[in-house]
Amino acid sequence: METMLITGANRGLGLEWVRQLDAAGWRVHATYRDPAKAEGLFAIAKKSHGRVVPHQLDVTDFTAIDRLSVTLKDEAIDVLNNNAGILPARKKFGQTDYDEWARIMRNNLFSYMKMAEAFVEQIARSRRKMILCMTSGLSSLSAAGSRGTASKFGDGKHVYRTTKCAVNMLAINLAGYLAERGVIALSVTPGWANTEMGRADLDPGYSPDDLVDPVKSVEGMRRIIATATIEDSGRLMRWDGSTLPF
Ligand SMILES: NC(=O)c1ccc[n+]([C@@H]2O[C@H](COP(=O)([O-])OP(=O)(O)OC[C@H]3O[C@@H](n4cnc5c(N)ncnc54)[C@H](OP(=O)(O)O)[C@@H]3O)[C@@H](O)[C@H]2O)c1
Image (cartoon, rainbow, N blue to C red; front, side, top):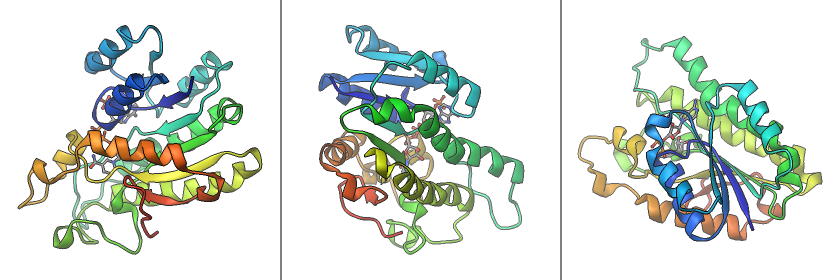
């Protein structure tokens, strides 16, 4: 049985991953931070005959990450899916909140490395040996985004953009560090998806109907994990398998 460890799995794309992998017979270690917001996850877990296992985890609590690694010490984890993330409110030039920026860096970036360092043994002993880092089309240095004129550099999203741009560099480094152990590290963008985060980022003139269906997004990313090889390690990919330029 294949196993994924996924963070931020109580809603949005994370919960869709759990739904699809449960239906496909995977074992899923699915983390959430607030039980009051995890009813959907608990409901899937309850019907899964023990294959979907919820774990409470705030990814900014690195001691808790170490504790979870001890709990799962005997597991083989085919895919670590670093999915939890925050999109902060837009801030104009001159209004940057530096404490918030540091907090979001820890949330969106440092936690991805901490998860990789904490779970590398479980990943390396698995069959697929894969680390997914959820990034964004907004991470690209050479393409402002995929929304035509609505997406341009200087759009008040420098905090989010820098965390995700750094995620891409982190994945390349993970690819380098872990190549000898056969571990594949990928940055993957789920597309502008119809989740709370995606809807919170609607530009004028756009509606939720313009966003990628989370079902389609996760189906696409599942095709990536089914086909990626060590030669792909370090790549920056869109959910549909195409390459996003760095
Ligand atoms: N939706 C998009 O258009 C889009 C586009 C590009 C990239 N992405 C990326 O895709 C990933 C999933 O996005 P989404 O659309 O599913 O977002 P979402 O609907 O806002 O869900 C975010 C998830 O991350 C969790 N999370 C955030 N910080 C956490 C922390 N410190 N500890 C534990 N869990 C934490 C949230 O938990 P709570 O419920 O407790 O808050 C929630 O489960 C993110 O990395 C995001 O940046 C999304």
